[in-house]
Length: 160
Image 1 (cartoon, one colour):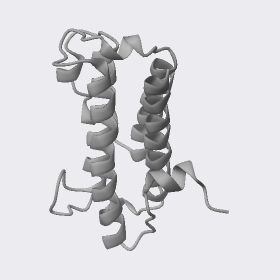
Image 2 (tube, one colour):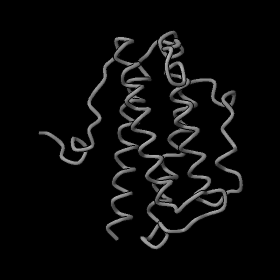
Image 3 (tube, helix red, strand yellow):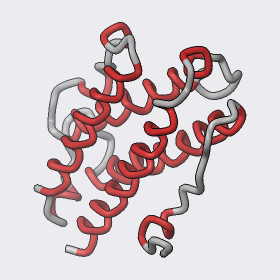
Image 4 (cartoon, helix red, strand yellow):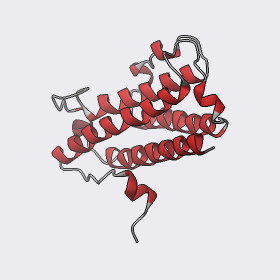
């Protein structure tokens, strides 16, 4: 049970850090939110949409939904950051529920549309999130918004 519990912890951290970023993003002006940053996916808005889309697609693949990894969210369905954050929260809760139901044996399952076992996908999503959180935190810093360290140890070992 150590493997699945470790992945649950990793994803709890992943969700907690994105929620902190969302809290900062909610305080940006519309101009700051949509300003092209000239890197990665462009603006904070684009970055937030990309990560919401990727987390949703990979989860769909793990849930065995046909073609889920290749069926992206439609950007026009989430015209405001509040709508996008609400969609992100739905996916975050779905990830939590999905991970809660897994056993160590389930981690070895290779599902249709997946190139390897479930644990590869679960690790990938968290790692992908760390990459894009670092980019987003830099964007926020450059926009004059608050940023914070996202070190996992600070999540695991909260400071007083």
